Image 1 (tube, helix red, strand yellow):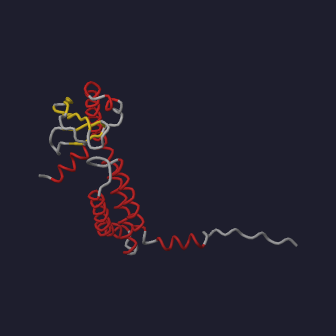
Image 2 (image 1 turned 120 degrees about the vertical axis):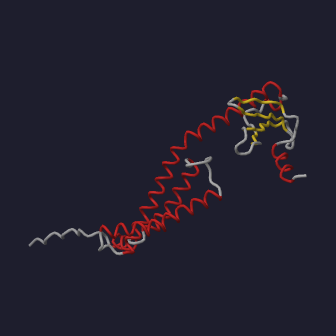
Image 3 (image 1 turned 90 degrees about the vertical axis):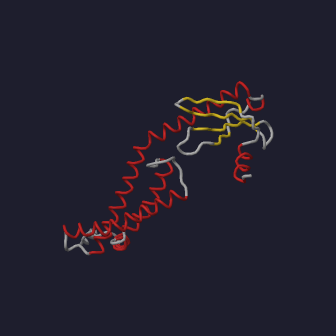
Length: 213
């Protein structure tokens, strides 16, 4: 007599059921951590404002942004969810609302990054054009040692926010504390370069400027 074939279990494995049970009501924590990681990546490559890159100030603002979304979203969104489904437990409603609010915040950051991208590209193009202008001046006036190393400029920004762009583009001359430098100024859309009489390297000039008189 043939034995009957065993019926395949339709229930999920025990470990998967346990994982679902543990995650239920705690998805907002996973969303919070994921939003911090995704937000950090967006700030580094596709920021909604400013220049790409991570800084302590940017990380602090990101943390505050995600935290506010999580707290406010869970409080406001839970009410809306429980209005639609009064049988939904309060803790589950708050968890789902916080998760959706955090995810929407990440989407908003990404949209802002895409909208700000043209400004970032235009700024980089202006910067590259100014460095190229300094390199062209070096080709004409720099010593031979510097001309052989035009592919590796050392650039320092001298202008502050809101002022016309001013860069100090330097090339090595064989001494670590000395360099041949050009001051490149961009005003009214045109980049102009002149030779800098100061032969200090950018690192030395910056350190002495920080020390002050």
